Length: 278
Image 1: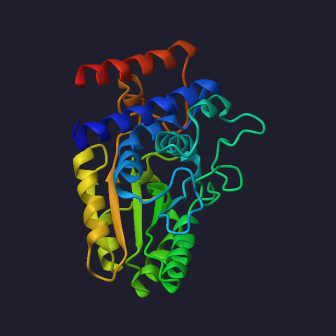
Image 2: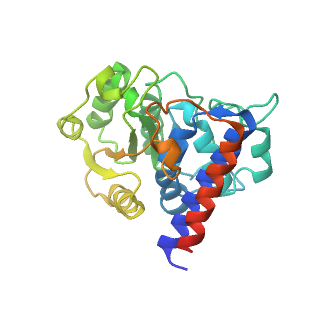
Image 3: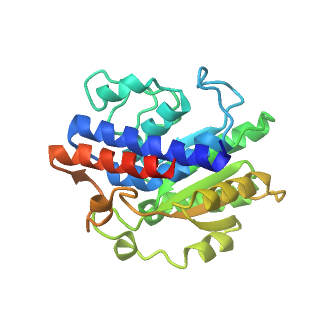
């Protein structure tokens, strides 16, 4: 089995887990999970150093979910990584579950921060990266954020701070799906030319198709191996609802509700496509 096949299967399972959790509640931020699954598959299936049975291992790479509403995507990745048992997905969003609908570090193994108030992840990541460097810990800090967080001033203060401190152990991942609660992200607050802005702030910048596994994998490898003492960002253009045609075509995908039979239709479509590719 090739590495490419393994990563494709990981991405497929992440999407499938997310759909199953969405079915539990009948709604959720499933469009983001489908679109971001390839990035998460590379992060947890290829790039990151961690121990599934010891989520607090001191030498682990840290993954900060700044966009806490992506929790359903992140739980799916944690299940795929073996950090959370698959059977727990049936408790998603329920009372006393370790899988609340928005990410909370006090509840979930592998969740490094409580997210949801956007723009906080990158500042926290800068502090973590500084602390790890002072401790001579070789771990990387990954900050995962949405394009909507580009509207937040705290994000750009952190961008400037990371560059000032030369944080070579910090990798930022930006999911550019051009959707947020109030409409298309680029219309709520125009952010292009985005790559040029990060370059101007002193970061090493890559922009890739976030649904191209090989491109994402290469970008992660480049970011980790870069010899320069500067922070790194990977700008990932993704398609909301990726892998499920009737969700890809929705005009508004930020928070979705679908009719009960459609959850199984979506899962069946993923299964058919994966089976054909096997």
